Length: 595
Image (cartoon, rainbow, N blue to C red; front, side, top):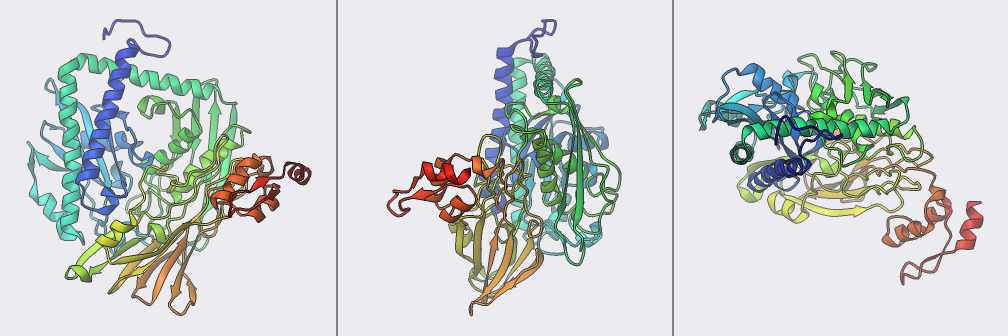
């Protein structure tokens, strides 16, 4: 690739080579992902896939993320900037461990291994492997400490971008520090080595790439690819109407920490003339005395995710496209830059999920064809953190976050919400647990995992229905930490679409007595009850009475909708039977009813 060659209108000198290299970088990130998925020890990583990999440039620009979770990867370059700032003696064979939310990380549970990659004697890339830990040493057995007033009460082990390896030799002091504080030390060590292996895999592949194409070609590609990405983003923004948008919402009340919840406001200035979007988060309350504060990385990542959700999905996610987005923050804000020692224990979820929803709902106010409804935000029984001592294995301790029965996804301008959505910040990219594997790994027994008919937010394009999960302990006692938003403030529909359903959590005792569980609580299961939780459904997009009647019929046949709601909510009259699949739309009666 000739540096002097003229660029085309899309910013590329050699489009064919750029396509080859862009896909090669993407492939390297996917190889990192496969390495970590198949070598990690904790179920949260090797089954739930709650981790992400990315590649940044040496000067801290995000280059490639493949299918990394947006909340993890969009701020990778913010995190690597701490490495280059704190360590002036970077060398081949180095590796760093970084989970400090005040130095560019998301929250303490997301431990990241950073490996600087060298070619021709200079630092050219940084490989990033970030994985959500099953345990991080919090004072409660959960990586989400909702009640922590500060980092001291939170108790997590924080590694502020410390050197983990020098000349490919492990610094054992760092590992011993972690193992002393983690409830499942061998599992933590195995996950750490898996992340290190993923980053070293990228190092080998990137070195091979530089040898094959030369660092000069790679340098030119980086500039061209980021410029191309910026051009694609500019084109997308110029196609939007000029507008100042805003949306308000709230995180649920949390007793006794936040009896009024967390009010939230997002403002967006969409300027197609300048091809720029400015997001203003400064008009929000100060940091709260709880673990719900957004780290700087999470605040930026989550509103950026909301923007990308509303644009052409083929726009590359990197620092080139990010140039056209500006996020305004203020110090000591619940959705800004938290002031140490305020806790960011839950920065990746909850308030972060609400930010994603607010941005895409704000875009929907542009009118038909824009934005999305809100997706489910509940992390209830199906996403609780379980812990205890496994009586089947000599009392060996276990800690794990479940990923069973996710929330419903939001309706959009051209499609229904999807079932495997999870929560807004992961955008459907985590995996659902295998029930059978969870029952083998932990003393847990599932009673139900099922879709809940008639719960979806109605719309021309509906949200996905809620799911119900229930389980008990097989022997001994199990501690369950619940961190469920969405039990008081439901996901909201747009342009006439219906809201999603509220989440709920109950203890169901053997005598059939039910007891409501608080949205944020620590529950002890001892065999006398099962824990049952329902997630949020996704909200709807557009007037439900404009939905294709055939789609309503199909939803009833699938068991996602009920005949009663088909008539009352969608205005669709059905004939025949579900049992023998003779169900059909009565076109004349439907037309009359909708009028």
